[in-house]
Every structure is written in C-alpha cells, then in structure tokens.
Length: 153
View 1 (cartoon, rainbow, N blue to C red):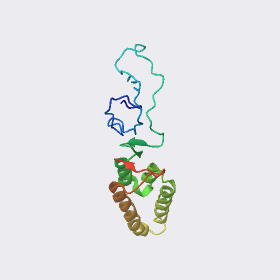
View 2: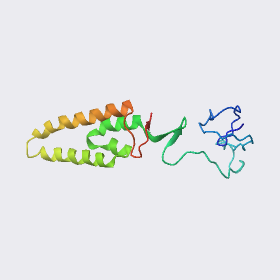
View 3: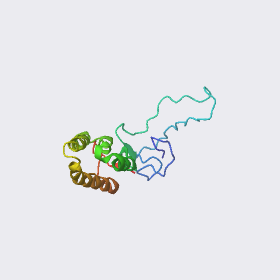
C-alpha cells in the first residue's frame, strides 16, 4: 500500500502514514510518487510538477493528524516578555480584542502618569500580573490561537 499524499510504501495494515500523518484509505492501488524539486539543479532541467496535494489546510499545520496553529509558543512568549504591556502577543495569536484592550490600557496608564506625577505606576502592578499569567499560560499550552487551534511549539 502507498500513501496517497506523499507516496511512501506502507504495510497493508497501516491506518496512518508514518511519514506525513495522513489517514489512509484501504485502497490497494499504487499512488504516483511526486518528484521533489532539487534546489541545486540547473534551471529548466527539472521535471515540472503539475499538482501537489499535501492535505494541509491554509489555517493550520497538520502534525501527527492533529491540526495545530502556524503560530509559535516561543514567538508568543517572547512578544509577551518584551512587549506584553502593549498586547503584541495577543495580536500575534489572533486575539485582537484582548490585544487592543491591553494597548489602550497601557497608553492610558502612560497618559495618566503626567497629571499624577507618576503615581499611575501603581496601575502597572495588576497589569504586569495579567501579562505574567498570560506568559505562563502560553508556556503551558493552554492558550489557543484566534481560530481555536492549539499553538505549536
């Protein structure tokens, strides 16, 4: 039996391709193998590939037959670490509403620091805790992207 997506030869009793993770249909016919382009070949010397169906939707990645977000936990964590008060990590993950709220609140705190002679700095403490908790949630994997998909490592 061959995988219909990547063309790898598999045992007849296989239910999933161990190369690409595609669920297999119990068909005994051979699937054509799509040649992979050689990046070091001379231009025009390669066989043209007319159709490649990799079975991955545009929204997320298909890892081990589980659809995950193309967003990265490390990227979201670093954005929260360096720009957490501005909500950039939430914009990155697709949570535009929360990101906008954090951005507006941060700007409001900055503006309030002028007439209060910096006393609005105490408003930063709960704001810091909010971002810190979000950073922990990102690392633990309990945060999903805007499409509801788990964020990949």
